[in-house]
Image (cartoon, rainbow, N blue to C red; front, side):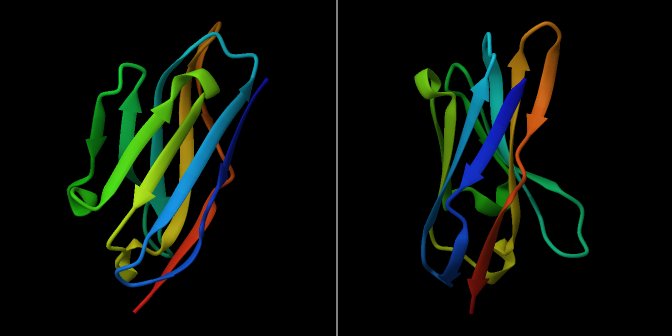
Length: 118
């Protein structure tokens, strides 16, 4: 079994910063991709950023230049550094991991709340 656990959410003021962490643990052969998603009240879950095991990162346009995703492959951990936060970044942030076991499966964390006040 694989567990994915996020941490680091909280309250920040507009223009401030937060850093989210996400660790995958359990029986893991390898992880192809790890990513961050978010869901604001009344909205659909959206992709924020992803990073491959080779370090290739991709971002939704609304966070480019403000958020940075990084990964520690040895620890099966991914981070999301969020700078210049805006009230519209307020959401529950979820982490996922595409785990290449037998079979390959996607595992999700429970989510962490990020609230940005104006």
